[in-house]
Image 1 (cartoon, rainbow, N blue to C red):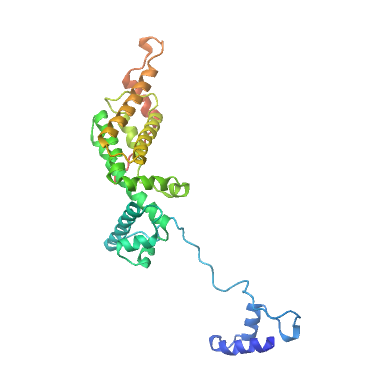
Image 2: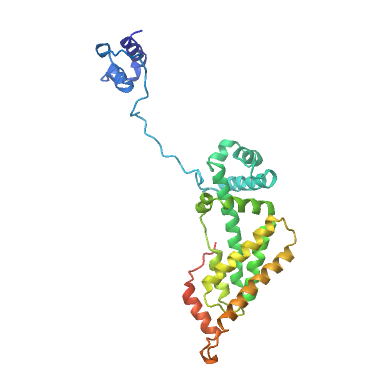
Length: 292
């Protein structure tokens, strides 16, 4: 069949879709870059992909973010069910068996229902990390209800240990996933546990620090390092871990406070604890804390 005959056959077939003013032959020639018989080439006929297809391309949504936020009680329950199912799949099947199909099956919903909220496994993982982080922050905020610095600090340590051992397998696997930079950067913090610790360190009863901001960062690293390492070893003695973490934290605060006052300067030139604390407040520059 010659080229023009192919075009005429296609044009006749699709002519009901065209308006009366549309030149169907011209349309097909333009879309498929087909030469007419008058300009026939020696090469065989090939219908190519149109260069400028008329349907616009839609932007691809991020696979790391939920498709939509729940706005109704029913959708909130659905998201909560999916996240808990994701947690259970991680605990029972590990990272190797963690996928959207397994989560949908555990939640008792279709895969299409899951994709209405989460476009990928990574989006589910981030939302689950977000859930655990928000729970940790809410528990940590209770420390500010204790006026005593030592009691408030003890509460923060207890919260850190409890979070790791309440669901140790889940906590350990989420720590592994959080080590992936793309997932860690996608987390949106609703509040900073470090800001809670900053305020606690400036309360009476704790050894005053020259730079509370540095002390808070160091203590966060110490607590997390000890707790995460215990989780990797699958320890079950929470009381023993709490004692070790408390000893490390108080040892740091005591040694760093003593180091500043161990110079040979005259006693009258040594800043008093209250002055140190006021100076630390100015250096830390703490911001207001968010309460959920």
